[in-house]
Every structure is written in C-alpha cells, then in structure tokens.
Image (cartoon, rainbow, N blue to C red; front, side, top):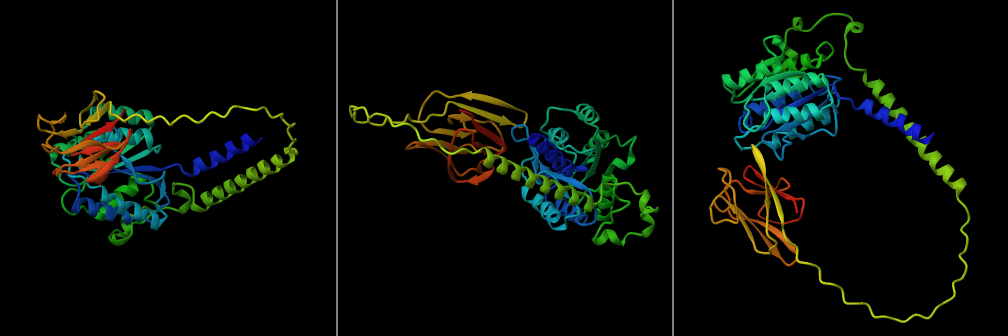
Length: 385
C-alpha cells in the first residue's frame, strides 16, 4: 500500500514538472557581447507574461561530449517573473572566447535530456566541434517527436544561416526560422517568434517594447478557443495534493513502526575469559599516491594516456620538452604542471595565456584528486586513475 502511495505521489510531481519547450542559448565567441545581451533582454521580457514551462541551457564547445549547461533544475515557469529573469540574466556569465562551437552535439544533448515537444535555438549557426550532421539531428528529432525552431543571432554569415534553415526545415516551415543577427536583434520580433514557437502567443503578451506592437498582431477569438497549458491554479492544486499525500505516507510509516516496536530483551551474561593483551601493531604507512591514467578531450575526439607510476612532476604544454605535449593553439608552450607535495597532488598554472581551470573554476595553484577535470585552454584533461 505504501509503495502505491509513493508511486502516485511521484507521478504527480513528475507531471507538474513537464516542460513545454527547451530554450538552448549559444554563449560562444560568435554571440557574446551585444548580440547575446540584447537577445537575453528580449527573453527576459517574456517573464511573467506566459504560463509555459521551459527548460533553459547554454552551450559553446564540447566539454567531454556534453556541451550544454542546464540553468534550470529541472524546469522553470515563465509566469514566475523573479526566477525567470534571474535564469536569463545568469546565461551571460557563461560567455566563452574559444572559437569552437559544438552546435550539433548540444542539440543532441537537448533532445535526449530536454523532455519537451519543442526546441528553440538562439544561436549563431556556427558548427566546429561535433561529429554529427544535419540528417542525424533531424532523424533524432523525429524519433523524439520534437519540433525545431531557430533564431540566428551574433556574427553569422550566409553559410551558418543556411545551416539553421536546413536544420529546422525552413523551406517547408518558414515560421521556424528568424534572422536577428548584428549588434541589436529586434527584441519585439524575437519575443513574438518565441511565443509563436511555444504555441502560447494567443494568451501571452510580451512586455516592454513588444507591448507597443499594433493590436492587429494579436490573434482573436474567445478564451475557450485558445489552446495552451493547464492554468496555474491547476498545478498549485496538484502540488498541494502531492504534499498532503506525502504527509500521509510519513504518518503511516511512523505510526506502523511504533506498533511493531518491541521491548528490548536483555542478552544473557557472558562468562569472562582471560585474554592475552597484545600491543597494537604500528600503523602501516600509506602508499604514495601516483597518477596512472589521463583522458584528454579534444574538440574532435579524445585520447587515453597511461603513465608509468612516478611521483615526478608532470608538465603540460605545446613545447616538445613537456611531459604531456598538447598541440593545440589555445594551450601555451609551458601551460601548467602537476606535482606531488606530501601526499597530495596539485596543479599549478605556469603563466599561461588562456588560464587553467579545475572543474571549471579558474585557479593558479589548486589541489586535485582522481576524478577531477583540468581544462587548459580548450582542452580538458580528466584524472581517470
């Protein structure tokens, strides 16, 4: 009975968190700056003016095959103005200067993890870090039952724009693509495009500049004819019912546990047996830690490197005299080094141009352990063993 209650409760919460759309924003060298800031401001203008539930992520180049960073956990209602504006504002903090964009890999990750019938891309259309192609993306989208939409922002030429048009099927669905390139994308057009993609424009109205658009642009019809998501009070009632069920399950668990509790039975006395006192052996000295295996992730693949057991420092860089030579333009000649101090390994930046990061935190000198990921330039080194 308890299991049945838990299954029902889980189903209620899962249904409450179902996303209507995934919004995927490119934060690469080609979009950062004025284009991205203007686009994010336009998206923030939708906050508090739609009942749609969305999942928001940002991406640039591929980090170990997973370029997307999700900003919502797991979804966000656009009707929650405060949270919605905070999420879109946070997207600008992930701007990247690496000239590599894993567009196809990011779309594949969004299709696999998004769980929504609509995927809206706010991207430049550049693609320099994926192994897939347009056919692979379209096949996966059809399999998942997802409709693709794209807004072209930032510094993108005719080639990237054509890539996006082919990707969303623009020549059959002209409403699936919007050109908003340059320093200042049209905020009103971007807002209307996103609302249209959400299927929510009949009951949502953009704020700010978009509200000044002519009234003829808004569809007509009675409120009963406007399709969309369930009203907000429905989800509030659903979550409230879930909380009541949860309290009931906890109460039943505690109450039944008290009924089954029995008085402790004293154990019979055990006759004492004289024993010989043996002094404890001296504690064994722990072995000196060594690094045995590294996995290097490049923009177009990965490489496994096995190291001989040693406590000697490991230098990293483009120069041929380094222990670990990485021929990548984003890596300095002598970029960083790994060294053992006592029983702890450390990574130290050697004055590199693009910096050294441990688990995406910029460091100058920092302790590391097995499982950590060190990024030098655009290259990620995983301490695998």
